[in-house]
Length: 71
Image 1: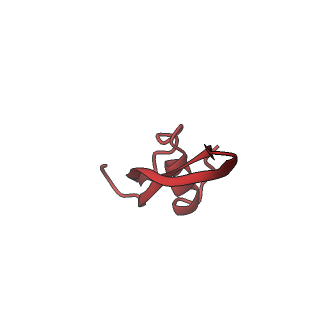
Image 2 (image 1 turned 30 degrees about the horizontal axis):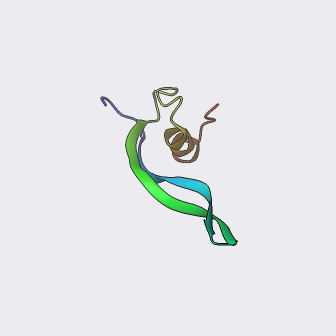
Image 3 (image 1 turned 120 degrees about the vertical axis):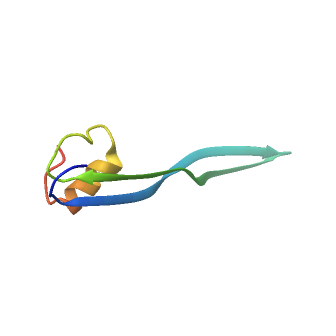
């Protein structure tokens, strides 16, 4: 990034949830497995909006860090 401006760094992880059922004899257990997946991070230049479209984590970082609407 070049020139003056507000730079915002963001980091997070993608959470995954998967429902399951398991049968053992006559008993069936149901539940949801939760896990963390791909780490996500990046840097935004608040003076160049819309570069982050499609990246929900970047959109939220821009909304909070740059004080702009991310729609």
